[in-house]
Image (cartoon, rainbow, N blue to C red; front, side, top):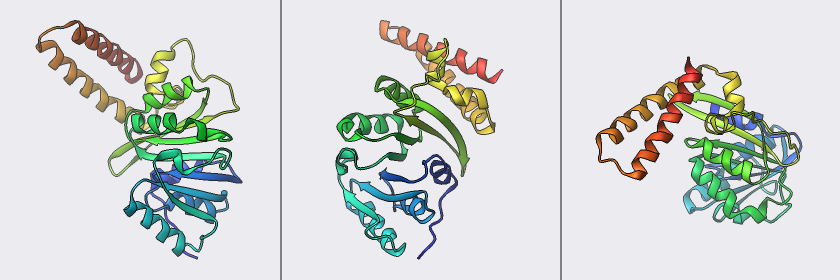
Length: 235
């Protein structure tokens, strides 16, 4: 049986998968995470969802090499359509944008029946996932941020049964930046937001020098608010 090695980012996603669960990993890319989770006795079984043939075949190959046929199953389909309700307890989606992850969850809502935990790792746009979770009654229970090969990734963990809200009276700011990340503020966090601030300042300068419309004035106000929040965080 082969040992599967995970990147630092995926190892951190793995750390948040509850013990003894049935896992679905959507957009798995080689099925490294689900195979690792089963080989290391974290999950009892796993489903791998892939939308295109190349990654689907790569996933099947990893499953075969890991000796996990019959325990980890690769399925081809769009998002959560590879699942039936109550089939898994935990879903992981890693390595996509926040808006894509949110739309996968939104489009597959009826397949979330019985899913207790979501472990989501957006490359960008984590705030879009926080809004979706809040709207759909999933409580954000943990967040993490990790740097790997010069890129910074956020990890969001949400629970269906834990109904404790992580938000304070500064909810809009916390939805944007992350309520748990605001408390931790590690090096990766500071680096990310210093970079984001430069981006927002650049966009603001472009908007200020362009023709003013009602829409652009509104957009400028939103960006100014975000810059204020980031300054508060970094000060």
